[in-house]
Amino acid sequence: MKLNQPHHIAPDDADARRAAPVRVCYPIDTLPAVDLTAPRSARTNATKVAEVLVPPRDARCIDVPAGHFLRISSVEGCQVGDLNLWKTDNLAERFFSGKTRALYGTHVSTGDQLFSCLPYLRSLATITDDSLDWYGYDNDGGSVHDVIGTRCDPYTGRLLSGGDYHYCCHSNLTRAVADHFDLPLDQAELHVHDVLNVFMLTGFTRDTQQYFMKASPVRPGDYLEMQANTDITAGLSSCPGGNCGDEHSSDTASCYPLLMEVFAPKDAYLQTIQPAQPTAYDRSHGR
Image (tube, rainbow, N blue to C red; front, side):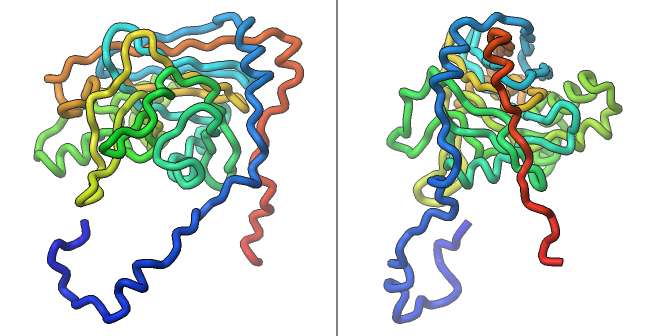
């Protein structure tokens, strides 16, 4: 955090320096336009081919082939979830929340793409529907579906409280990856990464710019849906903070399951799908 009482006196031209114009770091005008007409049409006739119910304070994984749709739904109560995405045949390629945030902002919604890490930087999925898109940004600057937070984890828990808690989202996802990909825990943990906080209501405080959370507006029946742009595996943790209105990483919050469903469009549509390709950069890095 910045100091309330700086150690150094501001220079005479401090106001002029602070008045420098704002520039968006990564203008997205040159990204290919996202046209949801065909996906939305295909979704109306899609058939559910798989589902997984994620228990409270636990996590599960599900495979989503290219062109298929993944729907994450609240089914019993106000609950947030931490989402990881991987390229199914290469766990080293995974969701890059930082670059997605740099491109689209702190919170994502319909039409935004979820990009993978370097050196791949491809669109793993495109958000095609969001039942909470009405929320926008509130008076505190908060919104839903953030790509700010890193996931609750036992290491930060120990750092701040001195105790151990094993059912935070990092540990939940570690167990889910181990089970889904048949890996030992120590190897599975290395593939868990910064998340898309589905349904979570977050922002930054006005005074200290600290990451905050509020009770999520999600209710049973709300959902976030995306289309896989290549073969992906989704891992979702039902956060031990419940709606994250009070705390997370504990057994005191009311927690509920989340539902992941996969829908397959008609074959005729799937035959038109061209899976997203990794970046064309040659990786020569100036040599």
